[in-house]
Length: 128
Image (cartoon, rainbow, N blue to C red; front, top):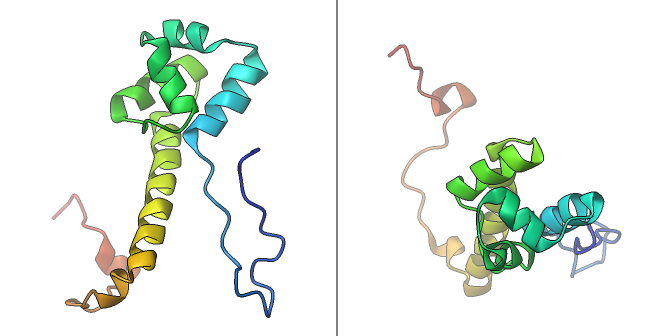
């Protein structure tokens, strides 16, 4: 992806600015793997999705988040899955929230109120 930050120095000793790469944004996927790859305009994609060109432009330019409804539309139009689009958005949202909380040092002030659970304890069975 064009906007993905390089990790060439990440994790190397002595690099105080090492940072994980940014997650791939849904807009990058739309631009590079849908619009450019299929030689579509934003208007053509908008028509295929049944939304306005403005909506597609907002998604492509990372000014609007993927909603469940948009994930369903994109999945059908691009022969992918809604989870693909929602997971791209979730990864972006979590990375942004992590940076925001780290800047304010707020997460460090959160108090643990429950012991960590094992993987077996983390999931609720539908049989219960």
